[in-house]
Image 1 (tube, helix red, strand yellow):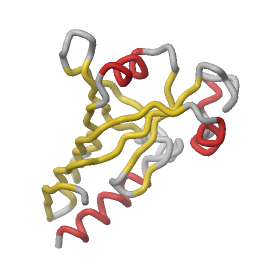
Image 2: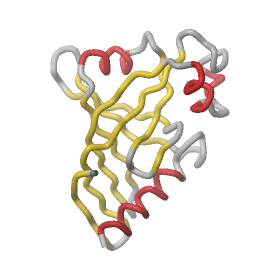
Image 3: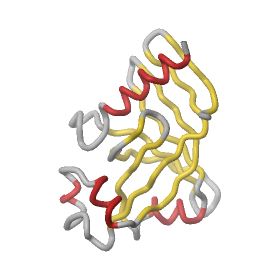
Image 4: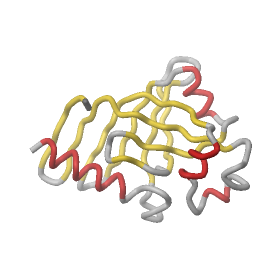
Length: 144
C-alpha cells in the first residue's frame, strides 16, 4: 500500500515540474536562516525523480543558496485540497554547467540570461523521510 501512495505522490510531483501546471506549479521550500529560524517560500520545481529528489533553480547570490551553504537541512511541501506531500531531507548547491543545462526550463529566462548565467545555480533536495496524504491513503516513512 505505501508503495502505491509513494508512486502517486511521485506522479503529483512530476506534474509540478519544469513550469508545468501554470499557476499551480509551485511548492513550499523551508530552510533554516542565519539566526536558526525556519523560513519558507514558494518555488518552482525544475525536475524530480518521484519523491527521491527534486531540483530548484536559484540565484547563487540569493537567500536560498546562502542558507543552504550554512545549513543543508530543509523541507518541501506540495499540497492542495486533495493531497499533502511533505518531504524532509538535505540540499546541495550545484553549479556544474551540464546540470544547469539539464535543469533549465522555459520561464527561467525571466530571472537569468540562460543556463550559462554565472548567477544561476541548482538546488538538489534529497528526500530522507516523508509524510504523504494522497487521495484516500497516507504513508509516513524513511526513504531507503
